[in-house]
Image (cartoon, rainbow, N blue to C red; front, side, top):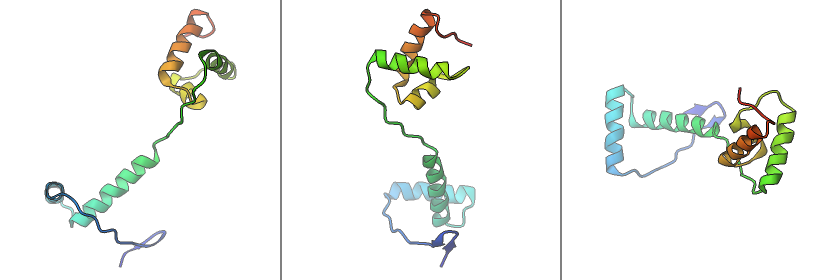
Length: 113
């Protein structure tokens, strides 16, 4: 039995379509994996690491004026900020932030660097 760093390994039976198994077998042969299991284990590990890096942000629904005020306050506390940082940190829709930043730029409050 395999022993992982965090404890005992567990078996998880799964069913896959024959087409998918054939594709896996092709990859196993081409890349020289010891078995389907080794390939599937590595694929799962890779995908789990990728998903762990995903940042999910629940977008807030606020008025344009509220968002504009929050963005002004946010920018007052920083020398520079990327648009995606503003959107993420304030939990605002990216396109919404872009539109507000364009307004603030026309007003002379911000400038593109």
